[in-house]
Image (tube, rainbow, N blue to C red; front, top):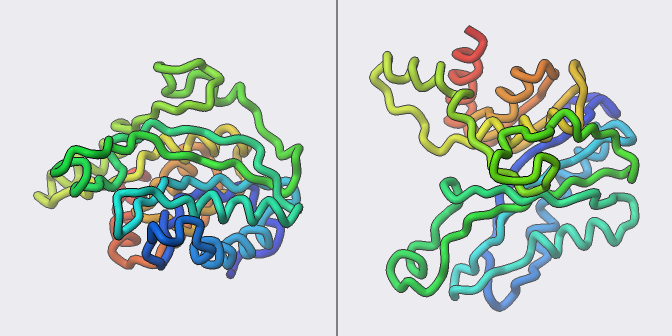
Length: 241
């Protein structure tokens, strides 16, 4: 809320997949997730340039009571588009087998469900003509797919090398659940130009900040977790050195 209106070109973020509610098989399209997300979307709309973009990563949520999926994230997206002031410009599918929560009961014990391997990024804007330049991401770490394809195979071992080396020197355990820097970097390159402002309101341990630093963009990131912010600061400080 401290950011001025119409100052941001891109919001790229991965919100809490379920929000502060327990997904249930009895209510697979629950509006609770959309109600929770609406507060953030209102602030995104306030700070975005009129043709700015929002890129949201969401993953399918398993119901807590039965081995079935809920689609509350699709319900939230549908409700947003029904209002008529947002457009869904494209979906991107990220091959992400290592970072998704495993449903151990049904995948590891009963062997009745397969592992999740893909999450979806939704590119949204209030303008159907939001600026983008696909030439900036031609073949970007996407060696398994078409150079202009929307199926993304991304990794970023290079991005955290200084942080990992510093953690080793401190004899501390580096955070293993790092969101790949390459994911926000892909969208930053696609949808922004140098010097423009990027925001991540669910910053976690700072991967979007690192991506913006590397790309020469201004950034603002925040997270509710003090522990995550502490790790993010370590990563950014190490990267800047």
